[in-house]
Length: 389
Image (cartoon, rainbow, N blue to C red; front, top):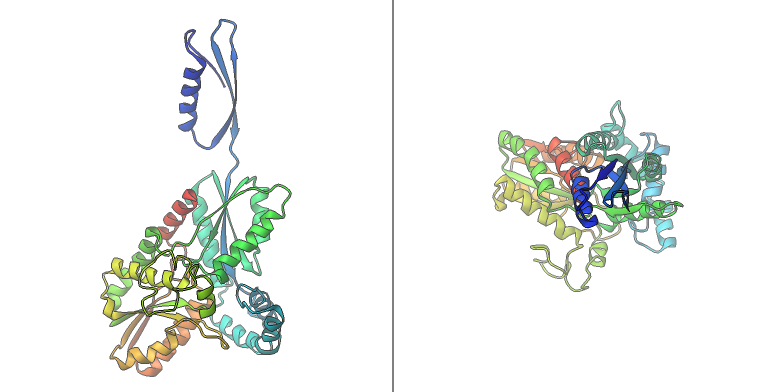
């Protein structure tokens, strides 16, 4: 495109005019050259070049390729070999994994996966794929959305290759973990950066951080829960989060003097517990209680999915259920806001085993509130977070 200036226009005036035009036409890059015209004025030459799309890479934990014991063993081996997940010295981690966990756990886990597997496959894959598709629509043509699993497939490497093939020169990493933990978001981001950094042409990379208190995430989760809770009328609402070893909580304490040293360490967020997973979980609970208009005395925050051998953060979900029943609770609703997508830990551990435990205690009713999954409110919030990264 060529734009001729008024005979008396200065180069600065024309540049200002062109810059204003470019700002109102996003999605394009412009190459320009200014020269003196034959009449003594200025001429601005602009070549319209389609901008390279921004790649958004959704990062999830992972899932076995099937419910076959061999595939589950392969998944668990990769997952539990990660030093951010089991943060023991290499020889000790190898011994724990190969002598204690892998000989027995794959078969039990395969049976659990069979209970949640659908004709389309893993629920985690289904929900993540649906989110990616909706997010692509929400973000528009200037973006390309892909997803990768930290462990197994579809892999992060395959997703990075996909975005590279689509011409993305900027990438936004979007870990799908509301609260930060080295074992989840930290590991996924590290793996993605290592894969991206190995490319000959390394793109610009930005990361969406933890969103435990992001209004969009909290509004989406509360929006899903509110009508279900209104209909169910629970006596008590339980917020169940994935657990972590206490050792890992203390390692995230930058002050080395705050986390788990007193009973109120997670009552508020501050510089000392800024990376504390447990504190972020409690902050999420507070945000949801406020949005749902719940009474704090009829809510509890707990932690699930622990492994034997270490002290994990408390209180434990399965240990809290009998206490709630003994206190008179009969109608229990459970939210699992450390997960953005329903998966084995929500559907089987809470929805099946948790329900069975509650009913076995004598509980009258049990409600598992779905995760945000690909709900339109979460899609809108995620699109805003990716755009603002």
